[in-house]
Length: 207
Image 1 (spheres, one colour):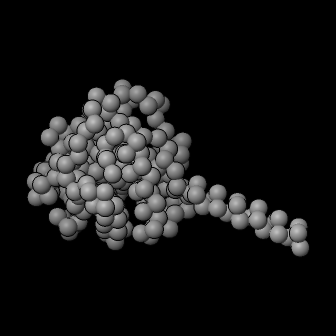
Image 2: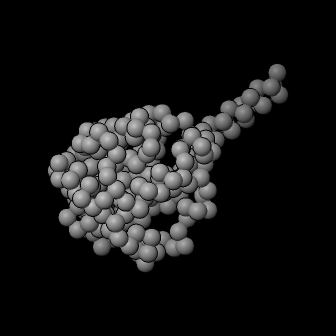
Image 3: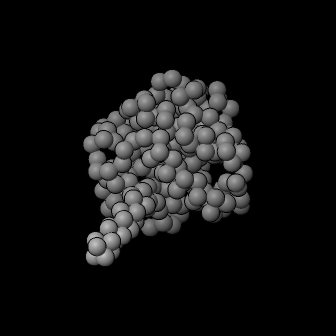
């Protein structure tokens, strides 16, 4: 009985560790030239072919931001359909939302190796995102619609970028990896908690 107790105790610890490590932040980057950037209203955009997943993700993120008194709006309440992948399409939605910042999340791929940049320096980020807000969105929109659904992947890598509307510049960028995720509100909440924790660490949000 003592052996069994030890075995099951070890098994429980293993399961807990595995569960806690199922979602992780691969890396994040912040524009250090911004001194305690003050967020205005955020337009949250989840780029996904599945409309239900998009709405759950956006709702969960907006709810989390609202709880820490950061004003935010889910894009689906402004545009029922996916936002057109053009400068004009995105500008129209931003104008209607009256947002001062835009947060965009999209599927990158299933391999962690593909998610790590060669360097975390400013030059590497500028190379990866050379087009600003209105150049970035059409590129990732078309990429998402060509690489399959979340459910097709055992490793899901998501990229989340935060842009300032006035300057169109990237403020913060992060990539996360999840192992065999079930796309529920609970999963999205765990993921969003990782993002919010890093945004707080980088002094972009102030709970």
